[in-house]
Image (cartoon, rainbow, N blue to C red):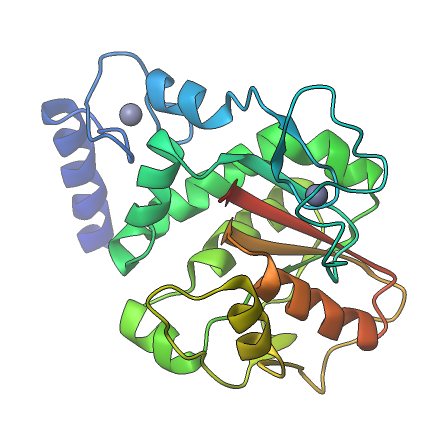
Length: 244
Ligand SMILES: [Zn+2]
Ligand SMILES: [Zn+2]
């Protein structure tokens, strides 16, 4: 027991000597951090000034009619029923996402999940989401990375919204081929059949929030959502940190 107390004491002393640094830019400011982030970084990743398509979270031009979708999602009919993002894949948000691509970034991934709750809770509750499922990594990828960043984000989102978190209910049964410059159609073909629902899962009538760090072409989230719909989900809403 005394060992733990000693560790806590050491932690407290370290805090005094080295004030905690921002998890994105490493600056240690005198102002208190919120969600582990300095005010510049937090402002930068939450100030999404663009008009956004509610169906696929793409940036659209001002005054675009997105009642039925945008130029990105209209031709594709994605498997999800709506999508939210913190912002576009650029600047500090892009830096943050690059940092969570290895195990040392796990605390940042969790904090970004809390930022998602701060920013999207009202919309997500209105959409009726009652279950969070992160986009799974193939076990080999998770093993080499040390963790699944989507799961770390999703865990915090579920906790913040007070709803179920079921990372084991969707499995990735095969990895994807890595292309240097995959075209959208190559990615769509590539991802087909990559996911399987666990036999313990029960998606019937659930409104699922599917969480990932970044949406690029949308083909991964779309295929995962399609599999959840086939398994009985009433609706699948996607939430990502950034939309490329
Ligand atoms: Zn910062
Ligand atoms: Zn769209």
